Amino acid sequence: MTTIASPAEFTIQRPQYSRTSAIRWVLSHVLRHNWIIVMVFLGALGNAALAAVVPILVGDAFNAMLLPSPDTGVLVPLALIIGGTQVLRGVLQLGRNFGAELLGQRLEAEIRDELYISLLGKSMTFHSLQPVGDTMARATNDVREINLMFNPGINLVIGSFFFLVMPILAAPRYHPALLITPLLFALAYFASLARYLKTLAPISDEVRASFGSMNTHLSESLDGVETVKGAAQEDSEVERFILNAKRVRDAFVKQGDTEARFIAFLLYGIAIAAGLTHALFLFREGLLNTGQVIAYFGLLRMLDFPTFTSSWAYTQVSMGLAGARRILELINRETDLDQNASGYSGEMKGEVEFKDVTFAYPDGSAVLENISFKVKPGQTVAVVGQTGAGKTSLVKLLNRTYDISSGQVLVDGLDVREWNLASLRSQISMIEQDIFLFSRSISDNLAFGKPGAGQDEVESAARAAQAHDFIETFENGYETVIGERGVTLSGGQRQRLALGRAFLTDPRILILDDSTSAIDSATEDKIQRAISAAARGRTTFIITHRLSQIRWADLIIVLRKGQVAAMGSHDELMRTSDAYARIFRE
Ligand code: CTP
Ligand code: MG
Image (cartoon, rainbow, N blue to C red; front, side, top):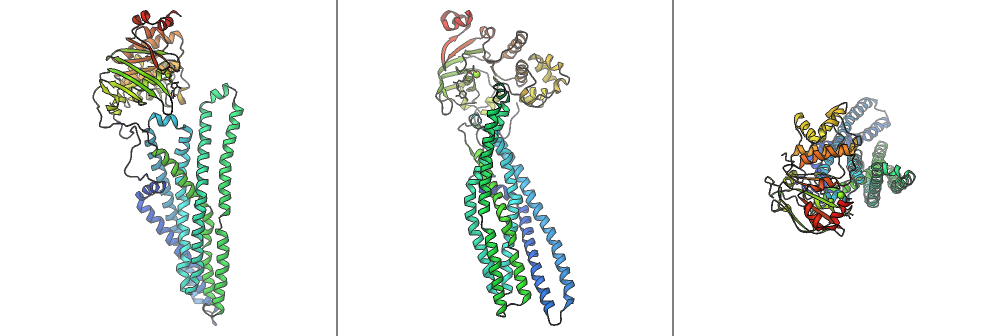
C-alpha cells in the first residue's frame, strides 16, 4: 500500500503561505526569495541614480563651455564618466531584469504547484461543481498573469519609482525651491494612481472572469464535441463561443479605455512646463546658471519613465492581482469533508453495513432514503434499479466520495467517517460507470493504483482481467499509448483494463458500476469471467443490468427512486417480489 504524502481530502492549510488576502498570499511567496528582491531593488536604485548622473554632468559640461574662456579639458573626463556610468547602468539593469524575470518564473512554478496539490486534495463535491475549463484557465492563464505581474509589471513599477525619486533628491542641489515641481508631480501621480487602480480592479476581475467562462465553454464543447456534432449543433456552439469571446473583448476594451483616461501624461506635460518656467524664473533672478537650468530640465525629463510605464505596468499589476485573487479563491474554497488523518487505518475485512442512510447532493433533494442492509466480508451484492434510481450514489457513499446526510455507513463495524480517509479509499476500488484512462501507456494505466508494479504483475493482472489477449494484438503491446480518455479502446476493453487495475491494487471491497455498458456476447462472456475472478475473496458491489450477474449475487438490492423496493437473494426475491420476478420474466 503506497501512502500519498500531500493530497488530503479537504483544503490543506500550508503554513508557509499566508492565505488571508491575495496581496499577502503573493507576498508570502515573494518573501521566500529575499535575495532576488534585494537584487531587483539595488538594480533599480542604481539604474535611476546613474541615469540622474547624465543631466547633472551635462549641466556641468555646459557651464564649463559657457565660461569666458571655455575649459575644454573637462569634456573628455566628463564624457568618459558618462560612458562608464552608463555601461554600469546597463549591467545593473540586466541584474534587475534578470531578477524580476527569475522571480516571476519561480512564482509561476510555485503557485502552479500549490494550486495543483490543492486541486488534487479537493473533494468530489468541489470538483463536480467547479467547471474544468475554468480551473484550467486559472491554472494556466491566471498563474501566468502573476508571472507577468512581476516582469514586466512590478519590475517597471520599482524601476520607475526610483526615477520619480531622483529629481526630488537631486534638484535641491541647484536650489531648494526646485523641489516643488518634482514633489508635487509625485504627489499628484500617486493620488491619480490610487484612483486609477481602484477603477481598474473590478475591470481586471471582469477580464479574468470572462476569460474563465470562455474557457469553460470551449473545454466543454470540445469535450462534448461528439455530442455537438451528433446533434448538428456546431453553429449554435460557435455562436455561443463568439458571444463569450465578445465578453472577453469588451472587458479588455473597457480596460484599455480606463488606461487611456489615466492622466499621468497630462501631469508630466504640466510638470515639464511648470518646472522649466520655474527654473527660468530663478535664472532671471540670478539664482541659477545656465548649466543648472539644463541639468534640472534633464532631471525633470526623468519623470517620463514613470509616466510612460504607468499606463500599462500598473495594468499588469492589477491583472496579476486579479489572477491571484482567482487562484486563491479556488485554493481556499473549503469543502466540508474531513480526511480524518488520525482515524482508523487498519487492514479491512470487508464487512459493510448501511444503517438508515439518507443522502442528498449539495443543494438537492434526497436521492437515497432510509437504506439499511448488511453484507458479510467476501459477499457479492448486486444493486439493480432503473436509471436515476440512485445506484451510483449508493456505492459512492462507501468510500466517502460523498458524505451521507443522515444515518450511518459502517465498514467492519466502524463508521466510514471514523476511518482514516486515505486508508479507507486505498482498500476500496471503484470501477466507475464511465472509465477514465490517462493518455499514458496501457501498462501505466493498469498500474495506476500501484506505481512501480513489475511487468509480470501487470501482465498477470491483465490476464486475470481477460485483457491480455487484446492488449497483445496492439503493435506496441503493453506500451501502447491510449488516446485522451481512452478513445481508441472500446467500452469492453476499457472495462477490462479497469478490472486489471483492481486486480493489481487487490482491494478488500470492489465496486463495479456496470449499468450502462452494452457489450457483445463474446466480450460479455470474457467480462463475466473477469468479474467472477475479481469478486473472489473480497466484498463486491456490482451495479448491473445483466441477469446472469444478478442471479449469483448473495444479496440483491432493488432500488426505486432512492428507496429499497426489495432486497434478498435471487430465490427469495423470485418468491416475494413481483417487481423482481417481472424482470426475469421479461
Ligand atoms: N444526482 C445529482 N448529482 C450528482 C449525481 C446524481 O443530483 N452529482 C442525482 C441524479 O439526478 C439522480 C439521482 O441523483 O436523480 C441518482 O443518481 P445516480 O445514483 O447516478 O443514479 P443511477 O441509479 O446510478 O443511474 P444510472 O443507472 O443512470 O447510472
Ligand atoms: Mg449510475
